[in-house]
Image 1 (cartoon, rainbow, N blue to C red):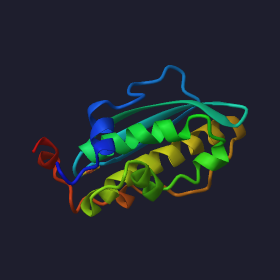
Image 2: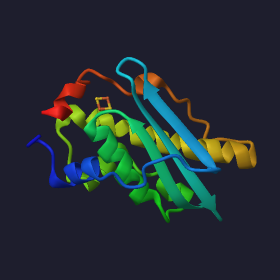
Image 3: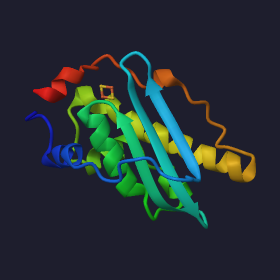
Image 4: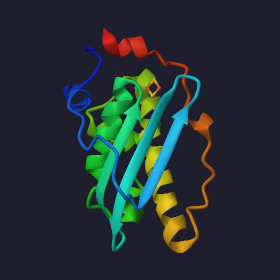
Length: 149
Ligand code: FES
């Protein structure tokens, strides 16, 4: 556990904005069936701004912490600004992640893109034009026991 910053541990132990959202404007679901890590992100959008965000993540501690901080980072952001949020920026906001856990932060970035894409498809009929691949989330270092140490 000493590889994790205090911010990672804080968001892992006390995740913000957890739970399902009623009537979300956009939903992003990403996951990897190999290890079972899944994230679902819900957003509410008003006048092009993300007014609320919630998540459900079934995954490792780093995935939960990155999901949690992502919801904080995107609230109040314009959609186009939220889309610029990279997994590296999410990890940085947490004070960094161990190298082998960087891939976990990809879940949050992908879920956010998918949620915005879902919102755009629902409201304009046209999404981001991105092809989402489950394989984008690599699991070479997937070890759920690591979080329990
Ligand atoms: S999200 Fe798969 S090990 Fe962290």
